[in-house]
Length: 359
Image 1 (cartoon, rainbow, N blue to C red):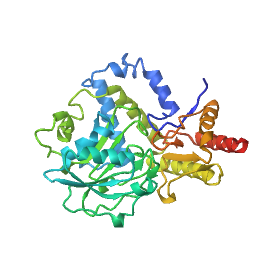
Image 2 (image 1 turned 90 degrees about the vertical axis):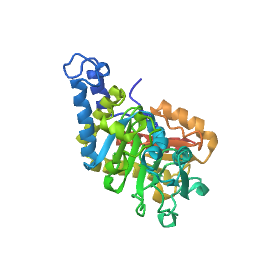
Image 3 (image 1 turned 180 degrees about the vertical axis):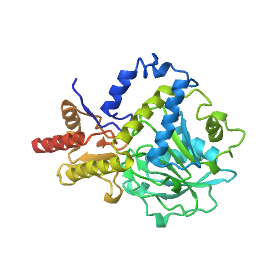
Image 4 (image 1 turned 120 degrees about the horizontal axis):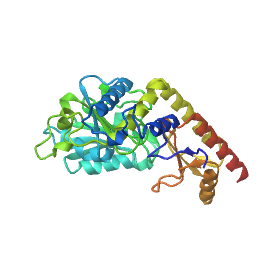
């Protein structure tokens, strides 16, 4: 089959040149005669990969020295439980903002470890907006404030860092990390699964300020303790070595594109063109309030639901894959992460216009 455009929400599209490099190095990494997946994580060759991985991420995100960068397993979903276990530090409450499916999951898991205060929710709008931060009922006695910066399923994204009013700010950035510039120092902790903008599934990045770690109770297993993982360079247990290598290739690719600042310009342009095509259409519509539309995940619905199956089948016949919306919301969804080229978005727009013309 010829090359297709993959709009999957995750695991998601890779840059083609990264896939080709991984293919070329699969059997022999840089003249070592070994594949990366065969290397000892304690060996000198993999140490180079690990050091460059952290260095490149710190450079791309301007991570200060007083933050630890961890590469963990278990997915971002595991952090829903690990975060309260690590950073409550004797406090009994945490504030959460509910803006969609992933916020809901984070809230549910945190309730096993503390009193969760849902200080704002957009459930009443079916998660098509974000509550104004001036209405958030922040409790100053809480340990932290958690929010999901981009809701992959509902296509809702925070456009700015919210005001935590002195609380430690924690954010799940799984689906928009490295897609836009952020100021790490506004956060106590950010975390993200890598399977959208950073690489394959199997690695979760946690960037956490030094003063927040080292307070986990003795009942927390060592592999879930951020301080223990930091002491061991995220190698308290054997890491997902090949996946680290692939994440490292993505980071080098991103640096070669001009870094986060340059990729953000491209992401804005791609999203604007797709939303404009939807807004000017009589067949397609986007349910999200305009100020909160995601640059990464663009849901849209057809005015005639009976056309959905035909749309998806025709899309695949034209090399446009994984456009079906999440089962909980239906419709369509185009995920246009960093690695999705503008040509893919333009091809989708052309297809949508032709489908509308013939239907």
